[in-house]
Amino acid sequence: IMQFKDNLKELMIENCFTQDSLAKAVGTTQGTISKWLSGVQEPRLYQLKQICAVFGCTADFLIGNENALD
Image (cartoon, rainbow, N blue to C red):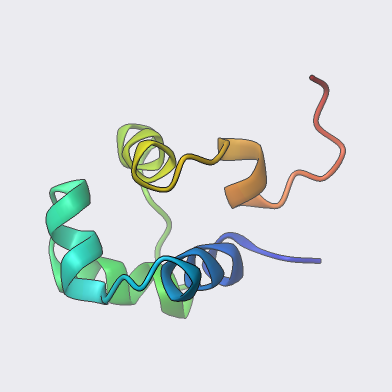
């Protein structure tokens, strides 16, 4: 099962984002992105929305909700 950290890492690689560039795009710090990628912490709802806007994806994709209803 894919988790948030795995999906975020995949999107960052596909879109050539570094931790620093994503931090700037989302309005947080590189340290916070590092915590997300290591699974130590997950984003708050408003941050999740910003990540979705940056990558053009759904929150369901990011959190690994494969059984989400449309």
